[in-house]
Image (cartoon, rainbow, N blue to C red; front, side):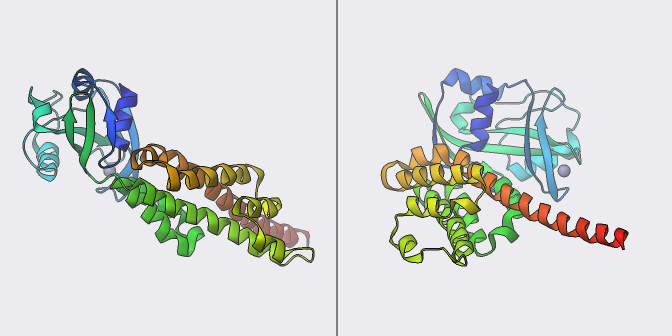
Length: 279
Ligand SMILES: [Zn+2]
């Protein structure tokens, strides 16, 4: 059931998930431990939010998420019970109280969905699904520079159910990564620019491969193939289903670049220190 809960939180708007009515009921009555990283609007920083034994859950109480949050934090902090309308599925809304591990405040997460016999389509979520991704994305802002807006657009597209559009923006980020490597190779004496310009993109990746980390290179190659297939052949829903995996693969490449930059900075600093000690 925990996997179902993860899916529910990560589902994009208008994305479908097969689920039985019984499973929906079990989800609402979820009594295990669940945690996720998110941005806390109260602490103004990333935190871990959790549902656990001491975290109550609420469902369909008929007030807005904001009202529910303040009401809960002020008056009902110690109540542990699950409150929900037995016909919750008819209201098409349910929510969970998650507790921020840093400030201890409860935050409500509401889901609005259209429930048909064996299927859920998410039609709304509070807070928005892309907030977490946008906060997480900030660490790549400097590295991505002009491409940062495209990265955010990919996340936004995915969160509102525009799967193919999201792939277009992810592919553009990959193309820029290869272009950056190309600019690095162009200054070598033995570089063949005419060959590069005549090559297909998959061949271009090979031509610049020696200045990109091996693991990143493998990821770039397989990502480019999947993203291109997605743009030309897959449905919106198929693209949405795989977006998070592809985004994480791109982030692995970016993390590798950040680690290299950090390592070089450290090397320069330590070399200076060593020279100072030696002299
Ligand atoms: Zn907090």
